[in-house]
Every structure is written in structure tokens, then in C-alpha cells.
Length: 133
Image 1 (spheres, helix red, strand yellow):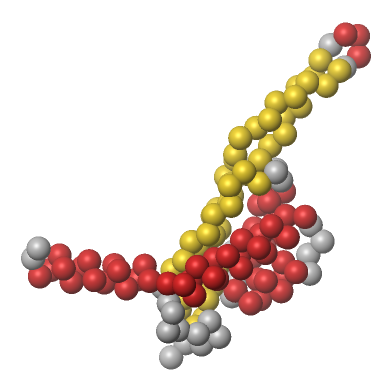
Image 2: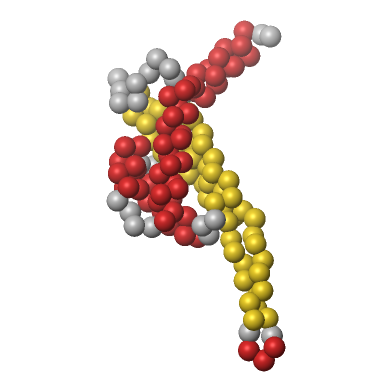
């Protein structure tokens, strides 16, 4: 491997060490309802985002709070020597995508049937550490 390639690989490795990812698959909340809560914490500092999620009345905030704690734990596992309070962790990206759909049938008037679509979602949170020093 050449010198430039090796230096580039080491630089990428250092930048990846500062980020942590957590994923939630097949959450039973609809993606639209989850996006309402996810938009509130996108780009926030981690402690402030946890505070917002803890004081929100929506059901989606409970699962997003657990997912954010998981992302923080993943960051701590990657950076064993670092302290979370010393780093300025932010919610870099949060993506909510549609998951599998359960299709049901509900009886309707005059012998008809209406389709009910029970939606689920997938959420991915990326937490990025920005050094204060």
C-alpha cells in the first residue's frame, strides 16, 4: 500500500472513531409519527436531546430515547479512554424510513371491505463527537 493511501486510511479510521451508529428496526409506530419527534432532536446536543425526549408526551419519544442511549453507549465502547462529558456529542443525523406493512381487512357497509395498513418504521441515529478543546 502506498504512503498516500495508508495516510488516507488512517485519517478515515480516526474520523469513524468519533461517530457511533444505532439502529431500530421494525418499530410499530408509523413513520410519520416517528418523524415528528425525530425532527425535534436532529442536530441537537445529546444531553439536551435526551431531556427533550424525556419531557415529550408522544409514544415515539420513548423508543427514540432508548435508541439515543444506545448510540451513546456505542460511542463510549468505541472511545474507551474518552469521557462523554468532555466531548460535545451531537445527533448528527437521524433517518426514519418505512418498514414492513401489515395489511388487514376491516368490514365496511353494504358487504364491502376496506384495507387497513398498519405501518412500521426503521430508525438510524448517528452520534458525532466534536472535541471542545
